[in-house]
Image 1: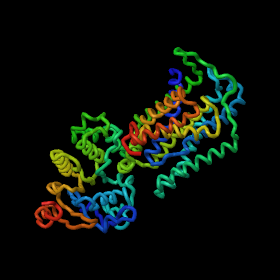
Image 2: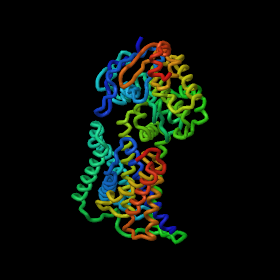
Image 3: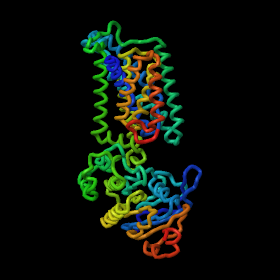
Image 4: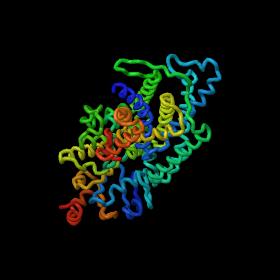
Length: 233
Length: 302
């Protein structure tokens, strides 16, 4: 069953069209990876899906509901969460306050969830009272994901979680993403790092605002042509 | 010198009061509200109306303890704050919200806020004229403190009220869910929306808080000096300087910036004519913009 359907999305900034009609599908329970070089339109796609910007044309369906053009404020209520690539924390708030803000719209008791998140990212536990702006890159990324997880999302959108991280941290983050998925969270992750394919079920390759290839992660990894053109091997 | 430092802290406390709302609104909406100063003027004049109304009730005419003002003025804080809150929220709903909805450039909001400022000041000129007004006639009792510090009793009141208000707002922003969300918005508005925080609802709260602080700042400034139509407009400059010094959206920054501005302006009178006080504020602002555009406490570029 498809949890997210993106249907020929056209979007851009000002008068510059970035996405020229991109479609993709995310099945429930999968990790779907959207690969592509800088400027391919990956971030724009996530922003258009999550209502940070309004798509010019096309449709976004989440759990069979048409959410195209919904503002992000409303989408957060539906069970989808988004971790932007940059500026994904509240720097002057403490770690704990960042997570609390993640749960802002929850009406029920989110305290147990908070402890679960600290259990999931134990490094954050000792830094509860630190200002988020003082954290290292890896910890910031964990906090950003933790903030999004406070709402128990069914679908998590991650924008290049590996950017700027040392290789061992990249492994750690991908390992956490894999674990999340095993716990039942569907994941759409945007990456430049082809390593993301290792843990993905399905992948799309995006370049120049158009879909260049799609297939199971295995197929794309084995395809020599694609490897040479897009994955740098 | 000691005396100038004390005066600086008093002036700084009032600047700090005004700058908290300004920095929050700037952080959340990108709007640099030029009407903030004239809203301060309006707050002060509203208290003037109520003080003279209350003066008809005999016992409210009596002076409060050792201070120069009456119980009537003290009571006037309540209606002045309420009206200032409503006014702040209405200005936002009627002027700035439509601009936000159309995605107008921040400069458009800036110019619109100058329009709001001039409209309010025009109204004050029409109703009260250009002359000075005072909350109370007669002598202002003085205190003689060690180190040759002469202080009006009123000034003790000003400091206590200003810091109590700042402390209350600080607690609200740090301890309550709503307050934390306002800080989150001022910090990273786009991420706050991604987390589902309703910006427009939070903005009503933010303008409300700004309205409370504006009214208090206006009345305290009126007690310290006198009421005149340009009082707030002139006050806007040190407010801007304090907020820029503190960094966009930073509350601690705005508080520290306010005190620094107050001190710099007063202490400068050791060497400069008091007329040049605004120039000192300007100079500080320019230096900060050149050497530390993020402000002292800020993390983001202006």
